Length: 269
Image (tube, rainbow, N blue to C red; front, side, top):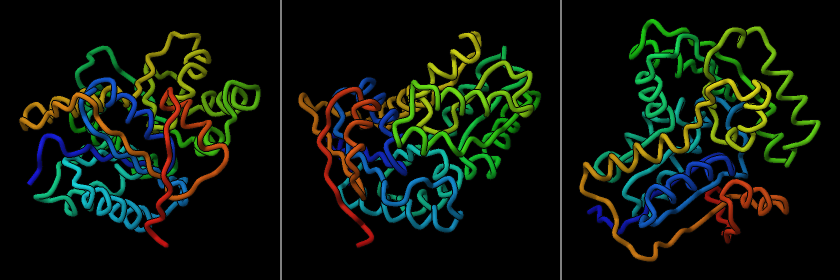
């Protein structure tokens, strides 16, 4: 039986989902969190659909074993490819939130958008999930998509706020696929860490859509409707990775905005 005090489970292929976890912590300060970063298998963006589903469902089973009341798929690639499988895994045990549907609803609520761009991993862009879902709720909106596969390894390796990252950002954003867009969806939870660099490329005149706060607000509304908001005065947050690298602690501080203690658990050993 799901109880209010049961934790929220959040998972991603690496540290990118910490942007979502941090937003959840800010919007829902009384909720217990368990975060799982599958760093042993990142990035998910270049994996097959079957592999992404296998990794995602194994992590989901682990989070269910921790009695999580809701599973947040804080990875666009997993949200695009494994959402249905995770829903089936969680049936009757926990609610499921992905990072795409709340953004699609947000876009649909904005009448000013005419030609929206989407950047993400190859897995997310090749699935065409954003375009398909946006076309359902807002048929008149043009969706222009571009895979930006170098962004995740660039961020995971710490190449940010420097000439290398600026050059890579410029190389992608000048592609003809994104010509004429009036807004841009960051279709990967890693990308908010370079949001300012992306905004600077557009001279801060582009509406850059960051899913983290949108997803956190959606989650709060869901738990409110389900009468499952926690009232914990001092919530407990647990952070788990499937592999640990020396730089990981540095990058997690950048994403979560404070020092966090990491625990290594390899679900596949």
